[in-house]
Amino acid sequence: PFALNEAERELLVVGDSFVEGHACERDDANFPSYLHQMLEGQPNVVNLGVGGMNPADYIDFLDGLSVSKGDVSLITLYDNDIHLSKRNCIQTIRQAEKYEIYIPEFCKNTKNMISKSEISFVQKINKRIKTVKTVQLIKESLVQIPVFQKYFYRTSYRNRWNDFDAEENKWIRSSLKVIKDQMREKGGEAFFTYYPNTNRISVHDERYKIWLNFIDYVTENDNIAIADPY
Image 1 (cartoon, rainbow, N blue to C red):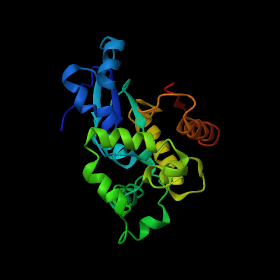
Image 2 (cartoon, one colour):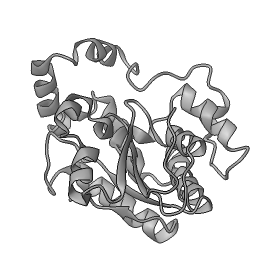
Image 3 (tube, rainbow, N blue to C red):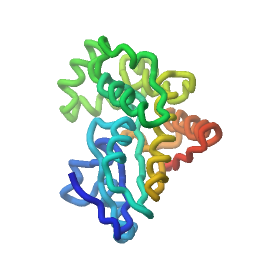
Image 4 (cartoon, one colour):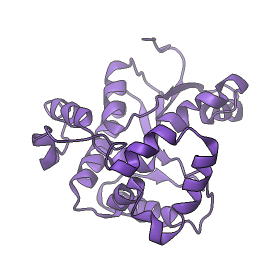
Protein backbone atom coordinates (compact mmCIF):
# COMPACT_ATOMS: atom_id res chain seq x y z
CA PRO A 1 0.00 0.00 0.00
CA PHE A 2 2.23 2.78 -1.24
CA ALA A 3 2.23 5.20 -4.15
CA LEU A 4 5.03 5.72 -6.63
CA ASN A 5 6.12 9.24 -7.49
CA GLU A 6 5.10 9.89 -11.11
CA ALA A 7 7.62 12.72 -11.39
CA GLU A 8 10.50 10.48 -10.33
CA ARG A 9 12.10 7.57 -12.13
CA GLU A 10 11.80 4.39 -10.09
CA LEU A 11 13.77 1.17 -10.22
CA LEU A 12 11.45 -1.49 -8.81
CA VAL A 13 13.49 -4.47 -7.64
CA VAL A 14 10.96 -7.31 -7.60
CA GLY A 15 11.71 -10.71 -6.11
CA ASP A 16 11.50 -13.03 -3.12
CA SER A 17 13.37 -13.17 0.20
CA PHE A 18 16.79 -12.71 -1.43
CA VAL A 19 15.67 -9.34 -2.76
CA GLU A 20 13.88 -8.49 0.47
CA GLY A 21 17.12 -9.18 2.37
CA HIS A 22 15.42 -8.74 5.72
CA ALA A 23 18.45 -9.76 7.81
CA CYS A 24 20.63 -7.16 6.07
CA GLU A 25 18.02 -4.40 5.94
CA ARG A 26 19.08 -2.51 9.07
CA ASP A 27 22.63 -2.19 7.72
CA ASP A 28 21.51 -1.14 4.22
CA ALA A 29 23.38 -4.22 3.00
CA ASN A 30 20.72 -6.04 1.01
CA PHE A 31 20.64 -6.31 -2.78
CA PRO A 32 18.42 -3.24 -3.49
CA SER A 33 20.38 -1.13 -0.99
CA TYR A 34 23.62 -1.82 -2.86
CA LEU A 35 21.92 -0.92 -6.14
CA HIS A 36 20.70 2.34 -4.62
CA GLN A 37 24.26 3.20 -3.52
CA MET A 38 25.75 2.29 -6.91
CA LEU A 39 23.18 4.39 -8.77
CA GLU A 40 23.46 7.28 -6.27
CA GLY A 41 19.69 7.53 -6.05
CA GLN A 42 19.10 7.99 -9.78
CA PRO A 43 16.69 6.35 -10.35
CA ASN A 44 15.19 5.83 -6.91
CA VAL A 45 15.42 2.14 -5.93
CA VAL A 46 12.30 0.56 -4.41
CA ASN A 47 12.64 -2.82 -2.68
CA LEU A 48 9.65 -4.98 -3.68
CA GLY A 49 11.10 -8.23 -2.38
CA VAL A 50 8.67 -10.43 -0.44
CA GLY A 51 9.63 -13.83 0.92
CA GLY A 52 7.98 -16.85 -0.72
CA MET A 53 6.74 -14.99 -3.80
CA ASN A 54 7.22 -15.92 -7.49
CA PRO A 55 6.25 -14.57 -10.97
CA ALA A 56 2.53 -15.17 -10.34
CA ASP A 57 2.79 -12.66 -7.51
CA TYR A 58 5.00 -10.28 -9.48
CA ILE A 59 2.30 -9.93 -12.13
CA ASP A 60 -0.18 -8.97 -9.40
CA PHE A 61 2.32 -6.52 -7.88
CA LEU A 62 2.84 -4.71 -11.18
CA ASP A 63 -0.89 -4.69 -11.89
CA GLY A 64 -1.48 -2.80 -8.66
CA LEU A 65 1.34 -0.25 -8.97
CA SER A 66 1.08 3.14 -10.63
CA VAL A 67 4.06 2.55 -12.89
CA SER A 68 4.76 5.58 -15.08
CA LYS A 69 6.98 6.50 -18.01
CA GLY A 70 10.67 5.89 -17.36
CA ASP A 71 10.13 3.42 -14.51
CA VAL A 72 12.02 0.14 -14.66
CA SER A 73 11.30 -3.17 -12.94
CA LEU A 74 14.17 -5.56 -12.26
CA ILE A 75 12.57 -9.00 -11.90
CA THR A 76 14.95 -11.16 -9.88
CA LEU A 77 14.27 -14.87 -10.33
CA TYR A 78 15.40 -17.76 -8.15
CA ASP A 79 15.58 -21.55 -8.48
CA ASN A 80 12.26 -22.28 -6.77
CA ASP A 81 10.27 -19.72 -8.80
CA ILE A 82 9.36 -22.50 -11.22
CA HIS A 83 7.36 -24.30 -8.53
CA LEU A 84 3.60 -23.70 -8.60
CA SER A 85 1.52 -24.04 -5.45
CA LYS A 86 -2.27 -24.28 -5.27
CA ARG A 87 -2.36 -20.54 -4.53
CA ASN A 88 -0.25 -19.81 -7.62
CA CYS A 89 -2.56 -21.93 -9.78
CA ILE A 90 -5.57 -19.94 -8.61
CA GLN A 91 -3.70 -16.72 -9.39
CA THR A 92 -2.69 -17.96 -12.85
CA ILE A 93 -6.23 -19.00 -13.80
CA ARG A 94 -7.46 -15.54 -12.78
CA GLN A 95 -4.63 -13.76 -14.63
CA ALA A 96 -5.27 -15.76 -17.79
CA GLU A 97 -8.61 -13.95 -18.13
CA LYS A 98 -6.64 -10.76 -18.77
CA TYR A 99 -3.27 -11.92 -20.10
CA GLU A 100 -1.90 -14.63 -22.39
CA ILE A 101 -0.61 -16.88 -19.63
CA TYR A 102 -0.14 -20.61 -20.02
CA ILE A 103 -2.25 -22.55 -17.50
CA PRO A 104 -0.57 -25.86 -16.56
CA GLU A 105 -2.83 -28.88 -16.83
CA PHE A 106 -2.32 -29.78 -13.18
CA CYS A 107 -3.63 -26.34 -12.18
CA LYS A 108 -7.07 -27.36 -13.41
CA ASN A 109 -7.34 -29.75 -10.46
CA THR A 110 -5.72 -28.20 -7.40
CA LYS A 111 -7.41 -30.44 -4.83
CA ASN A 112 -4.33 -32.56 -4.09
CA MET A 113 -1.64 -29.95 -4.64
CA ILE A 114 0.92 -29.39 -1.88
CA SER A 115 3.38 -26.70 -0.92
CA LYS A 116 6.95 -26.96 -2.19
CA SER A 117 8.11 -27.28 1.43
CA GLU A 118 5.76 -30.17 2.25
CA ILE A 119 6.59 -32.63 -0.52
CA SER A 120 7.88 -35.54 1.57
CA PHE A 121 8.29 -36.68 5.16
CA VAL A 122 11.98 -35.71 5.08
CA GLN A 123 11.09 -32.26 3.79
CA LYS A 124 8.48 -31.80 6.54
CA ILE A 125 11.23 -32.43 9.09
CA ASN A 126 13.51 -30.11 7.11
CA LYS A 127 10.95 -27.31 7.32
CA ARG A 128 11.02 -27.48 11.11
CA ILE A 129 14.78 -27.66 11.65
CA LYS A 130 16.12 -25.58 8.77
CA THR A 131 16.42 -22.46 10.94
CA VAL A 132 19.32 -24.08 12.85
CA LYS A 133 22.56 -22.73 11.35
CA THR A 134 24.45 -26.03 11.68
CA VAL A 135 21.65 -27.83 9.85
CA GLN A 136 21.77 -25.24 7.06
CA LEU A 137 25.50 -25.74 6.57
CA ILE A 138 25.21 -29.54 6.51
CA LYS A 139 22.34 -29.40 4.03
CA GLU A 140 24.16 -27.07 1.69
CA SER A 141 27.16 -29.39 1.75
CA LEU A 142 25.15 -32.55 1.11
CA VAL A 143 23.23 -31.08 -1.82
CA GLN A 144 26.54 -30.70 -3.68
CA ILE A 145 27.00 -34.50 -3.62
CA PRO A 146 25.11 -36.13 -6.54
CA VAL A 147 23.99 -39.22 -4.58
CA PHE A 148 22.17 -37.04 -2.04
CA GLN A 149 20.59 -34.59 -4.48
CA LYS A 150 17.50 -36.72 -5.13
CA TYR A 151 16.49 -36.34 -1.47
CA PHE A 152 16.21 -32.57 -1.77
CA TYR A 153 13.07 -31.14 -3.40
CA ARG A 154 15.04 -28.22 -4.85
CA THR A 155 16.85 -30.62 -7.22
CA SER A 156 13.63 -31.93 -8.78
CA TYR A 157 12.23 -28.52 -9.62
CA ARG A 158 15.61 -27.11 -10.59
CA ASN A 159 15.72 -29.49 -13.56
CA ARG A 160 12.42 -28.09 -14.86
CA TRP A 161 14.22 -24.90 -15.94
CA ASN A 162 15.76 -26.90 -18.80
CA ASP A 163 12.72 -29.07 -19.55
CA PHE A 164 11.10 -26.67 -22.01
CA ASP A 165 8.10 -28.95 -22.52
CA ALA A 166 7.34 -29.06 -18.79
CA GLU A 167 4.08 -27.42 -17.74
CA GLU A 168 5.88 -25.21 -15.22
CA ASN A 169 8.41 -24.11 -17.81
CA LYS A 170 5.71 -23.06 -20.27
CA TRP A 171 3.95 -21.17 -17.48
CA ILE A 172 7.00 -19.25 -16.28
CA ARG A 173 8.08 -18.25 -19.79
CA SER A 174 4.58 -16.95 -20.57
CA SER A 175 4.61 -15.07 -17.26
CA LEU A 176 7.86 -13.31 -18.10
CA LYS A 177 6.35 -12.17 -21.40
CA VAL A 178 3.35 -10.76 -19.52
CA ILE A 179 5.59 -8.85 -17.11
CA LYS A 180 7.50 -7.38 -20.04
CA ASP A 181 4.23 -6.27 -21.68
CA GLN A 182 2.85 -4.92 -18.39
CA MET A 183 5.73 -2.49 -18.02
CA ARG A 184 5.73 -1.41 -21.66
CA GLU A 185 1.99 -0.67 -21.61
CA LYS A 186 2.59 1.73 -18.72
CA GLY A 187 5.58 3.41 -20.37
CA GLY A 188 8.17 1.56 -18.35
CA GLU A 189 10.50 -1.33 -19.04
CA ALA A 190 11.23 -4.73 -17.50
CA PHE A 191 14.63 -6.30 -17.05
CA PHE A 192 15.29 -9.81 -15.78
CA THR A 193 18.08 -11.46 -13.85
CA TYR A 194 18.35 -14.25 -11.29
CA TYR A 195 19.84 -14.57 -7.83
CA PRO A 196 22.58 -17.24 -7.70
CA ASN A 197 22.73 -19.65 -4.79
CA THR A 198 24.86 -18.04 -2.12
CA ASN A 199 26.44 -21.23 -0.80
CA ARG A 200 28.57 -21.78 -3.88
CA ILE A 201 29.23 -18.73 -6.01
CA SER A 202 31.10 -20.36 -8.85
CA VAL A 203 30.83 -20.62 -12.62
CA HIS A 204 31.53 -24.33 -12.12
CA ASP A 205 28.33 -24.83 -10.13
CA GLU A 206 25.94 -27.13 -12.00
CA ARG A 207 23.10 -24.72 -11.23
CA TYR A 208 24.84 -22.02 -13.23
CA LYS A 209 24.86 -24.20 -16.34
CA ILE A 210 21.14 -24.82 -15.97
CA TRP A 211 20.48 -21.10 -15.83
CA LEU A 212 22.66 -20.42 -18.87
CA ASN A 213 20.66 -22.98 -20.86
CA PHE A 214 17.41 -21.33 -19.81
CA ILE A 215 18.74 -17.86 -20.63
CA ASP A 216 19.84 -18.97 -24.10
CA TYR A 217 16.49 -20.63 -24.80
CA VAL A 218 14.25 -17.70 -23.80
CA THR A 219 16.51 -15.23 -25.62
CA GLU A 220 16.20 -17.19 -28.87
CA ASN A 221 12.60 -18.39 -28.60
CA ASP A 222 10.76 -15.83 -26.46
CA ASN A 223 12.72 -12.63 -27.13
CA ILE A 224 13.36 -12.22 -23.40
CA ALA A 225 16.82 -11.20 -22.23
CA ILE A 226 17.92 -12.34 -18.77
CA ALA A 227 21.07 -10.76 -17.38
CA ASP A 228 23.73 -13.14 -16.12
CA PRO A 229 24.58 -12.02 -12.55
CA TYR A 230 28.10 -13.40 -12.87
